[in-house]
Length: 171
Length: 101
Image (cartoon, rainbow over all chains, first blue to last red; front, top):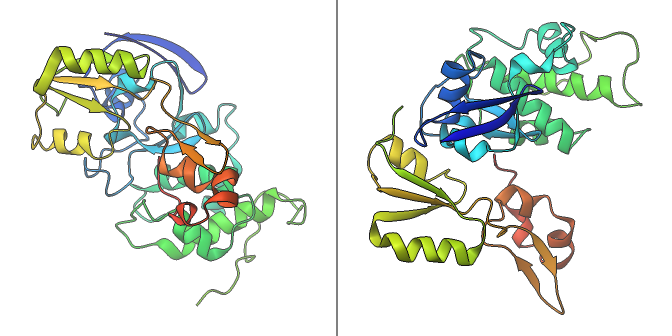
C-alpha cells in the first residue's frame, strides 16, 4: 500500500507491504541507518525515533502506522551540519562507548527535554529507562542530558556549547 | 520483513472498525499502538490474517465531563501520564511512569 510520510523534514511516498516495520522502512527503504534494530521486541530502545516529536520504538510499529505523520531520525537532528545541542553535550561529556545505543539515547533525550526542559537526575534516569546501553555507560549519558538541559535553560550556562565539568556529583 | 504477511485496513471511526471486525471475524485483530501485538507477531507467536488499525479512528483523547473523566480507548499511557486534566481530577491514574509511546 502507499505510504506518505515526512522523514527528516522531507515528504516521501513509497509503496510498502503492511508488514514492513518502521525501523526497516527507515533503514532499508530510506537508507537511514541511525536507528538500529537491536532486539526486535521493544526491550532495548536502539530503534528509537521521534514521531511528531515524541520518542517511539520503531521496531514495534508498522511503517504504515506513520501515515501522514512526521518521523525524525538522528540524521535529521543536524540538517545544517551543526550538531544539535544534545549531540554536542553527548560529545562533550563523552556519553558513548561503542555507539550502538547513541542515536536512540540522543533522540530519547531530545523527547524527554521537550517534555521536561529542566529535569532532575532521577527524572533523566527514569526518562531514559526504555533505552539500554550494552556498555553500561549510563553515568556519562545522564551527565550529558543534564548538561544539555542546563545549556538550553535561561538560568543555565551561556558560554558556548559544551560545558565540561558542569556535571553534578551523583555518586 | 519479520512478521508473516497479513491484510491491513485502517479504520476511520469506531463504527468502521466494528464493521471491519464483523466482516473478518476471528481472522482479524485490532491494532492500537502495537507495542504488545507487533513484538508477538515479530516472534511469530501471533499470526493474524488481518489487522484493523484503530490508531487513527478518533478513539484517543481525554475530556472532563460532569464529575467524570473520559479517556478514549486508544489514548496512550504517555498522554495520560502527561495530562494536566488527569493530574487534576484523577491523580492516581497519572502516576504511571513516563513510558515510550
